[in-house]
Image (cartoon, rainbow, N blue to C red; front, side, top):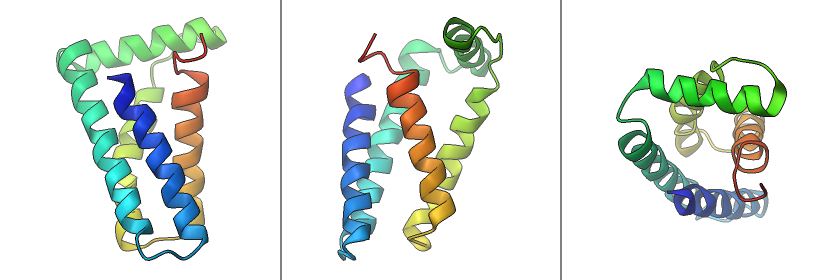
Length: 118
């Protein structure tokens, strides 16, 4: 399951580089990263949370409490916003606010909450 989000982050980074260079395949790279992200969400909800929002909320609260001492699972809603907003990039690329949000979410998901460094 972790390989999907790690690969998604790498492909999204390539998309950002491609956007910066005005490469015509930047949108396709972003779309590929999104598909990998959706695979991650699918696998997480299927294998870890049993398709339960309550279980995902509780796990988010546990991780937030462990990292910051705050018993709050509301961060899951940022993940839902991430899922809904990312496709905007396919139709309206180079939106600074959108890429700032996506990068913020990737940094939090991969570096702050990610297990690769713990």
